[in-house]
Image (cartoon, rainbow, N blue to C red):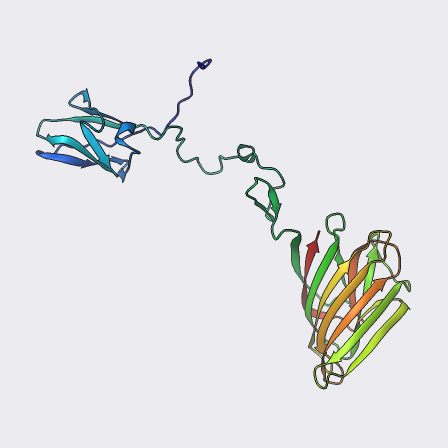
Length: 294
């Protein structure tokens, strides 16, 4: 079917630099802008010698960027032009930032947290687990509040590591519901404390508390570290939110311990935030990373 209007031009058309004939020489290097070029085949070229178009493969052949005429040229011969037509449907190399998303027929959201899959859809990097960023504690706050995007993620994992300037304190946690930190006695905790020497164990916590019990008697001296790994199931509104956590630190007796906790927020609510705070003192240095799980 004929085109209505001007027929589109297809190919990657290039005219080679002028070539000076060398007496008794048949092979010459083709360049465009001083850079060697290699046509697809001799059939993708128009070559004029002494004003006469040459027959490809018969009057000349090509190998890489070298054109070789069927017989040696002599002084007085003139290579009028060599035009390279390019491959059929070869559009050349697109300019930077010219291929739009629409040209890829891709779907989904393109941003710094997604990648383009083989089925032309953008997906979150790392599948359903997304790193939501790391925050460094600034100043000396008495608590750290972490907001959770519950419209996108159903679980969250929080990694905390820091140095406390105060010795001998307990570390607690509280939930945020509907944008407010809950201070009522809606918490239940069972925290098992396991010593690194002797494997002695003891447990802390209970039901109807005003906080989650995360760690007991942290720090035999000032400027000791406290670290935590907390997994939060935010709840569905018809089930109670649950947390599991592991912490590590040195206690006030100088023993190196880990605690393992099973925590429950005793209300049919959805947690949309979490607070960590010491029973005494402040956060002097630290950082936490939050991961969202869909």
